[in-house]
Length: 455
Image (tube, rainbow, N blue to C red):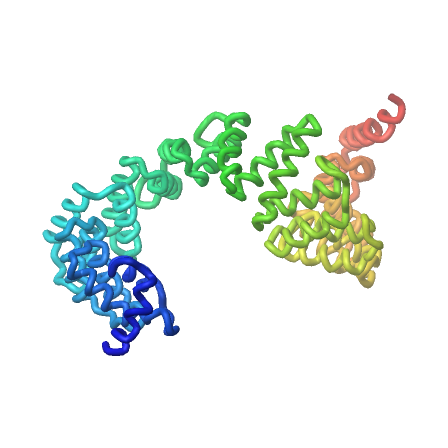
C-alpha cells in the first residue's frame, strides 16, 4: 500500500476525518491523481473501523457484499463487517444480518438467528429501515416465506407513518399482491400517505374521486387532491387535473388553467398531456389557435404511443389546417393509427382508398378498412360497408349483409341509412318484406332531415 501512503498528503484535503474520507471515496471509482480507487479506499474504511464507526463498518460489509470496484465479492466478509456494525447498534446492519441468515448467504441458513436480528432491528429501527427491509425481502424471487416477511416489514413501516410504505401497501391492496384485493383498504393507506405529502398517493386518491372508484364520485375532492400532487410536479396529476378542468370548464379562466397544467405535464414527457395540449392549440381553447404548435405536441404524443394523435395529425394534413393540404401524408398518418386499431383512422383511410385521395383508388382496400371500423361501431363505416355490399363494390354482392349493416347504421342515427333501410323493408331486399317497419324508418329519416329545417 506504499502507493496509497504516498498520496495521503493530497487526500487529506478532501476530509477532516477518516470517516469523511471513507464516505467520499466509497462512491468514487476513479484512478485520477487525486482520487483513489475503491480498492485503495478500503484502507480508509479500515482506519475508520478501528475507531468503531458503525456506519463505516456497515459500508465495509456493503462493499464486500457487492464487490465494489476492485474489492472482491465476499459474502462471508460482508457478514462479519455487518456483525461488527450491528454490535455498535447499526440498524441496517441488523437488517442485513436477518436477511443473510434467512437466505444463507455468507453465513449458515439459520431461522433463529434471522429472527433474533429481526427482533433487535425492530426494537431500534425506524420506519425507513423497516421499509428497506421490506424491499430486501421482496427482491427474493419465488419465496412465499420472504414475501410474507416483506409484507410484514412493509406494514410495520406503514403503521409507523412512513408515507412511501403506506403508498406501497396501498398498491399491494389494489393489485392483490400478498393480500386480498381490497380497493377500500388501498384508499385508506393512500389517504394516510397523501396527508403526509406523498404526491403519488395524492394522485391515486384524486383519480379515485374522479372515477368514483372505491368512493363516491366527487370532482371537487378529485381536483383538490390532484392539485396537491400537481403542485409537487407529479406529471400524471398535472395531466389529469388539466382534463378535469377542461371537462368542467365553463369559463375562459378554467380553460387557461387546464392549458397551464397540460403544458407543465407535457414538458415532463406526459404523452396524454402532449396530446391534449395539441388539441387545445387546434381548437383554440384556453389559448390562441395555432395548428403549427399543435403539430409539434401531437407528433411528440404520437411518438410516445398515443394512437389517436396519429389520426389527428392525419386529419390536419387532409384538411390543410395551418399547413398545405397533403393527402399522401394524411394517408401515412391514418394508416399508422389504423394499423394500431384506431377505428376513426380506419374509416378515414377507407374513405381515402374509396375516393383515391392520397393513395391509388382501391375499393377492396376500402371495404377491408370499413369492415374493421364498422366492427368497432363507427356508424359511417357501417353505412359505407352496407352500400358496398349492395353494389358488390370491392367485395361480393350480398343483399343480406347490406341490410344487416344498414340496420346498424340506421340504429346509430345515420339519416341516409334510415332512408335506405326503410326502402329495403318495403321492397323486401335481403330481408323479409315488412311495410310497417319500412315506413317507421322512413318517418325517422324524415324527422331528422326535414324537421330541423322547418322548425
